[in-house]
Amino acid sequence: MTVPMPISARAVVLVFAAFCLAQAATAQTRSGAANAKSATTAQTDEPPAMSVTEWLQRMHTGARQRNYVGTFVVSAPGGDLSSARIWHVRDGEHQIERIEALSGPPRSTFRRNRNVMTFLPEAKVVKVEKRENLDLFPNLPDKPDPSIGDFYDVRAIGKDRVAGFDADVVQLVPHDGLRFGYRIWSERRSGLVVKLQTVDSDSRVVEQSAFSELQLDAPVKAQALAQMMSNTSGYRIEKLELERSNAQDEGWTLRTPVAGFKPRSFFRRPTAGDDGGKSKQDAATVQWTFSDGLASVSLFIERYDAARAPRDGVLTIGATNAIRRRLPEPASDWWLTAVGEVPQQTLNAFAQSLARTR
Image (cartoon, rainbow, N blue to C red; front, side, top):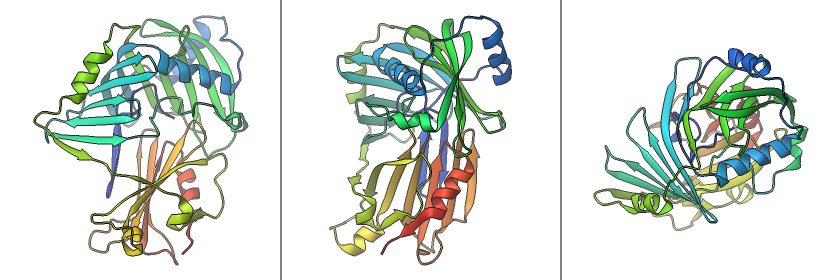
């Protein structure tokens, strides 16, 4: 699940061999158990009674329709902590955002609708791309999938205050072990998510994020952000070239679907000098993305290269898990990197089901 931050909703960078998943940002707050308890005892009035889809649509709208500026921090039990400053503007039908990393290497990310530019001042590089999945919480399409209610229940916990704002507190409880649960603090007037806890099957908080400071309806000028975004003087521009494709044409399938996770996109990264020939096409790296409407999983598939082949392995940072492995015969000349904010067993289910069709 992602948070109402532009582009990335967690401050974690996962570099697994050739692939990096950058997640920008957000907030450390007090212990989950203590906060959940205070939410139930501080006030007795209950949040409004709504379905899972209705709650998520409200939060989805709140993340897009309000101007705000705030500092967002994300923390994990292992001590990982990242923070970012966020500016968000709705300019008519357009969304413009800026995220300034406050920890780790300097980095500024701008988004205007689906156009994303990431400035890396130390390298003097600007990475330019278009993104279909904008990583806003909740990660819903414009028309929420009503099947979300088949995999999560919603429970009202109570009310609380975060960064000076009154918030409704609800819990999303998964029906199975393939997805995490969530405790969500939603600003009462707008629906904006101001705090989020990701919890495992034992109700342990595996990641916590929140605004430590927030200004709603901030006087942020869209034109000022747009000018900053276009100022690339002194930077080398690198464009991320992705081509839309599909699993069938690229020769991949899932023998058994993973319950609740639907395919959302399939892209291939062309190799240098790719002329569309079969050998070049087979050498390309592909990304196949799935989502249940909240959690998402990305499968990165590339040709095995003995000269630089990494070892099989797993990695966990907060709520984000990753596995890296060579596929079994008859697809043993391929490597898979599976990444998502899901339990390890979910990634294993994808890896075991992935099969080559040619």
